[in-house]
Image (cartoon, rainbow over all chains, first blue to last red):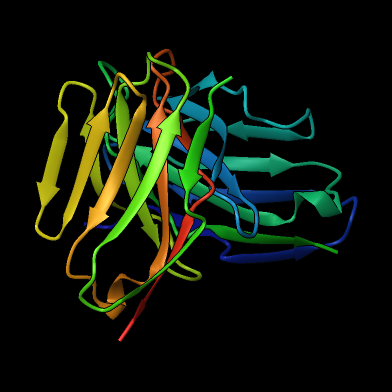
Length: 116
Length: 113
């Protein structure tokens, strides 16, 4: 079946602009995660959804970052007033469920965000 | 806070040799330890995982061992092939969390033909 998909694959924006990054999880997966990966580093956790609600947003770096998942499927990561330090690859992952212990997380191809 | 140390950062081996990558974690409540392989410009892909109720797991040329007492786990790749060249990340799910992964910094493995 189809894996996790993310759009756009690349996004170039100017400092101060607003961007939206989209994630389509694997059908039937109730858990959805956003990570950020800087060059030469491992992915860093941002936010986790179980269904429609954000179960853990402790990884969001500041209040310029926000994410939604209104119908429990597609999720959008929103970044306001972008800064050059926001440049990274934003990865989305989904898993069947997080209840009762961790399930395998399947990653999307990522969105490479470049802030000029 | 939660922390995963991964060593070495780079590893170069000859084709056919074995490769070992080690990770240590800080929280004894951690209960799930996956390993991901990431080729340049591609998504991380799970290659093997282990849960805290077992000490070893093997899948063909890949094995993972877990030492809960010492809080470390290792990836073992035998009979390495050039296509094994990639960056490998260990990760843990902190026992108190609901599933978010904490990753090591990665090991760049190069297998020379």
